[in-house]
Length: 286
Picture 1 (cartoon, rainbow, N blue to C red):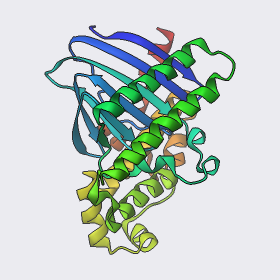
Picture 2 (picture 1 turned 30 degrees about the vertical axis):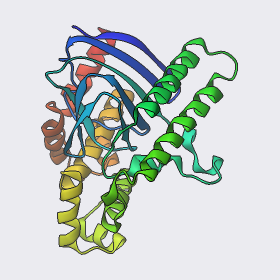
Picture 3 (picture 1 turned 135 degrees about the vertical axis):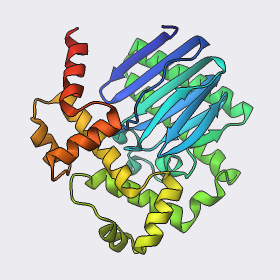
Picture 4 (picture 1 turned 180 degrees about the vertical axis):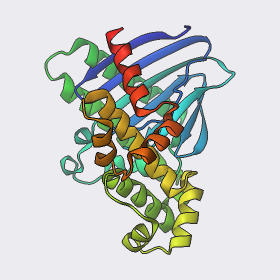
């Protein structure tokens, strides 16, 4: 294993992870996954491939990747040797809009493209603030969580201002992209219920055919494939963290048939639900 883990710590739902990989970066996340928090990924050197909502993004040095909550994604290596990145998982309450008078700091997570190439000056400033976050998390002096939150606000304020000033993603502000982002968030919040194309069409005032076609164009996945991905992610969490039966989990995440649940789960993860649970428990006890 070539990976050299520089630093990782979890503070409640907040997580910071700093990794340098010498040589060819061969490690990858084998399966799509999602988080209930916001993800900030800054690539300090090298190159990585990201697959987000069925679309491919080549992330390069100096780019920052902003992934919204409950968005399906995975990362894979390229042929470029060496990479260094800093990854933050940020809980929703850290960026509560009620705490900020004149800006929604999460708006940069809702762009059609999640990748932002920062100017050199901003790269230096943001790198410094990210390293300051790492130091605060390491040392945990009095007020360190407040310091981390303050640094995060400064980072996201700079990213939002830059994206706005250069009209970074022209098409992301169109009506239809906003609608699709709303549909994605709706599915993330309601996956446990019966969700159908006609229901979504009525909810968001878009025809069945237009919604189906546009959702696939924007996300790279059909609505049912995206819904199943969200459900499988939640199932994996329940299989890891609870002793609920497969049948209970199937019902809880919105599958009417345990057989269908098992088939969808294996297609997405490569394992049956039972195999996945055994694998996780063996890793913990092993």
